[in-house]
Amino acid sequence: MAFKRMEGFAGSIPQAFIDGHLKACPMCGTNHPHWSIDMKMQMKLEGNLYLFKCEQCDGVISSPVPDVTGFNNTALTTTGLIKRLSGKKNGVIYMTIRDTGNNEDWKSRVGEEYTLEDLARMAAEKAENENSGADGLTYY
Image 1 (cartoon, rainbow, N blue to C red):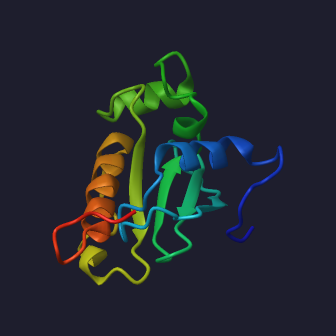
Image 2: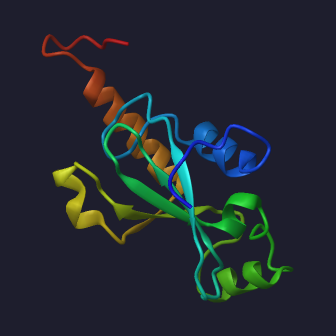
């Protein structure tokens, strides 16, 4: 499967997830990332991954499918128990920087993992910096 927007019922959960939680790209700061989605199948205990790509900078972040769908919110599920045993908190969504696209200043962060809350905060800060003009005023 190639990266694409999921407009119909199929794929609506990950599309609504990323569009609702990251309204700006943490790598380039655009307020219009127009996220596209792909899925990476893997034989790991954390499960398969959703990949989210920013249309503006081609940066890619990922999150385990069980995190996005809510199955890791409790240790009562297999993937939730594995998450807890690996030292991560249940109910917290973790995302990994997979590719920085054309963002040279983020190249050293490839492979780093952040909470969704941290990425949203970094995206808001980056968007604010990108939208600030040289005169100190903010443009939207």
